[in-house]
Image (cartoon, rainbow, N blue to C red; front, side):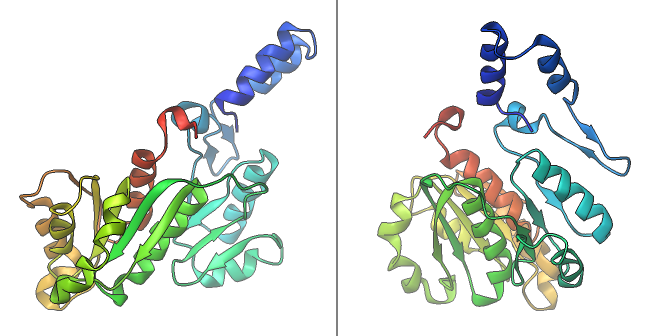
Length: 254
């Protein structure tokens, strides 16, 4: 993987004859993707978007995931695999000893070799404890991408005083990820109290007429409060990614 900082260093090395032009051409030839046969790894994404490619684990075999993770490691890139079945992780773990797994979030990752100070502040808020799998997927994704995270769990509208007790924290956040099932009203309540953008994540939690998250999705989409963006049902990763982009300083600089 190549980011802008690395590309500038290569060009500087070539200009000062510390790197042969042929070496630079060989490096650039791998862009914009690395063809593994069963997958085309986007080695250009960090340079283009400022963030690496993240791997969706569901539906991939452990051999395919092993090949992708191994190639990411060779490129010294962030390794983050979402929606990973624990049985698949059990097959990967002996072959990649440093790979960590969060069973609640179904998320696997390699701890970054060097940790920068996390940027800004993103609050991850849930309506109830049943929303925690999606919330942890969001919170861990944010932390691995480099955002500072505060978890505010089980503050749904059935007892809104629980949410109000966290208002000073919420008002300090640069972005807020609100994760709720049932009727999904929590996103509107939060957005009406804060200046920061709210990323709403509907979950599939609820009884029959919630239609596995469709009711919460429609409530969030129909909110009368401006400043809310809505992602797909149970998509903690998507909500976290958007919140991180909002939270990080311009051009990724801290």
